[in-house]
Structures are given as structure tokens and as C-alpha cells.
Picture 1 (cartoon, helix red, strand yellow):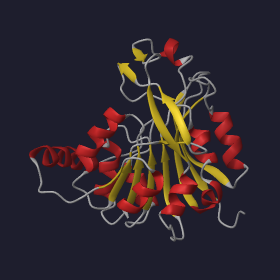
Picture 2 (cartoon, rainbow, N blue to C red):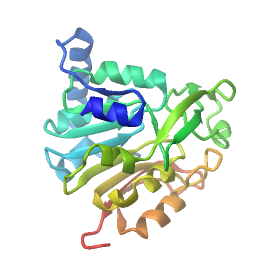
Picture 3 (tube, rainbow, N blue to C red):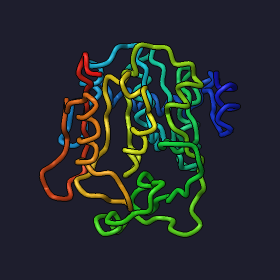
Picture 4 (cartoon, rainbow, N blue to C red):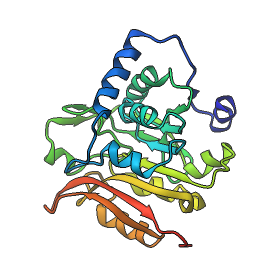
Length: 260
């Protein structure tokens, strides 16, 4: 499967192979297991206790915005029979995610930005207080809200962009549902959703990081997401977003049965 997708996409896509366990892997897995022993919801994000109650053990999960693979590894440990496909545009973060996840045979990760179509985009990597705030959109009010997070505004990476509809078609996706679409892409959430095409109707749950105001130029807001998804049969299942004007948080959407 990995070879077929690599040829189709023309980008770096690695099927995670089973390797002899390394000390680093054992340490990472131990820490993730410890955190998962009790993982309730918090004021800002869903806990894995809730996810275990919502998703089947063999869930099909798409994670857009891996960062360094921490959440991905938790998915594997929570859902050992799951099929997980992840994407990360930042090459440095992708490399760390690969080292973390290469031991898991049910995970495939791809170094690309997920968007509404094929192309090439600038990627504005973040530094300072956060390596996880990079985006294919240049930062705007993010610079004021978190001044200690800096960005490569010149000499930024060029990254391939692909739509999930083409990825899933190349995968010969034939399951009845995408159990979870997990999105953390710093303002580009609507581009990801637009690129789902008809596969959006197969999503049971969509979990996104949202902001009440645009933090990146042309970036998506909570209101944009709400309008797009409610018009397509989704309702808020869990909301982790404050009431302040510039609140940032997360929302879990669930698709209503029978909506077309």
C-alpha cells in the first residue's frame, strides 16, 4: 500500500515497518501508556477516555497535523486494531514523528500539507515557544497573541499539497466510515474539509482546533467551521472553547444519522 500511494502522490509517504524495539521507542510508549491510564476531558481538549467510549477498537483514523506524533501514538495504544493515516507538512516535525511511529505496523504517515487541491505551498515554520504553530498560511494576529512564537517569514519551506479525496481514492478506501478525522492545521481547517469531497459524508466524528478570530492570513474561524459543518449534517458533540473574543480551543463534531 505504501509503495502504491508514494507513486501516485509523488511525495514522501512511508509505510511504517516493524523494527526491533529501541530504547527510545520503549520510553515513548511507556510515557504514553502512563498518560492514558486516566485521560479525562479537560477545559481545552477531549480526553482519550471519551474517545475510547466513542470509537471502535478497529477505528479508521485520519490525523492531519501530526506534529511529532504524540497523539498518534496514543491512538495506537488506545485502538490497537485501528488503521491510522497521518500527515505532517513540517519536515523537521515529520522526521521526529517517523522516528516515534516507525515501530507501529498499522500507521502510515505522509510528509505533505492537506488542502483543497494539488499544488505546492509555502510553509511558515514556527520556533521559539512552539514548534507546532506552523502553517501554509502566514501568521497575522498570532504574532500579537503569542509574541514568543516566531515564524520563518522568509526562506520558508515549499511543501506539496494534496486533497484527502484523492488520497482516499488512491487508497481504495472501502470502509463504511471514517471513524475520526482529527485536524490541527493552524488556520487551514476549511481547506482540509473542502478537500474531503464526498468522503466528508463518511466521517462519523471530526475534531478540530478552532479560534474565534483568524490567527493567520485568510485563516478559518470557529464561525466558518460551524457554518460549513452544520450545513453538512454535523452537530457539536463536545466543545472546549472559551467565551472570550479571541478564544482558542477544540470542538468535536458528530455527523447526524440519515443526513444527506
